[in-house]
Image (cartoon, rainbow, N blue to C red; front, top):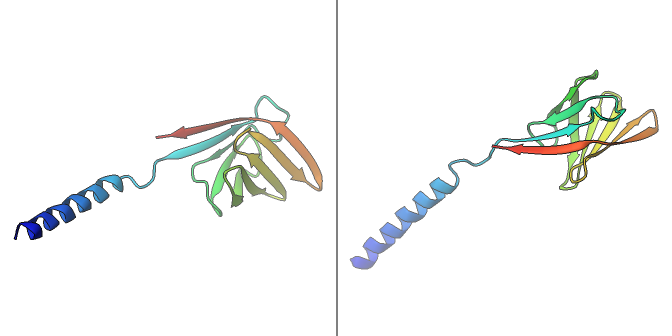
Length: 114
């Protein structure tokens, strides 16, 4: 009988621990690439969700959204209208390809978590 009771208690504690750990499964994360100090064709790109198919907000240019085509720990590849934008996640470097012309900008990368 005591073994059965301790197994029930262990199962209850394990269930409570799992519920506590997964109470907040994802935190709010925002990635920001500020290019205002460069000659980039936009001021800033902001991502609230970083996964394939998600959209990012482009400030200071038209079209005003980028669509993420691929994501790694090092880089985010996006489509921006008829252009492609590659963002280096560690350095903040932004590479824009438009009509086979490649331009690189030293932007500032920031990440906000809540």
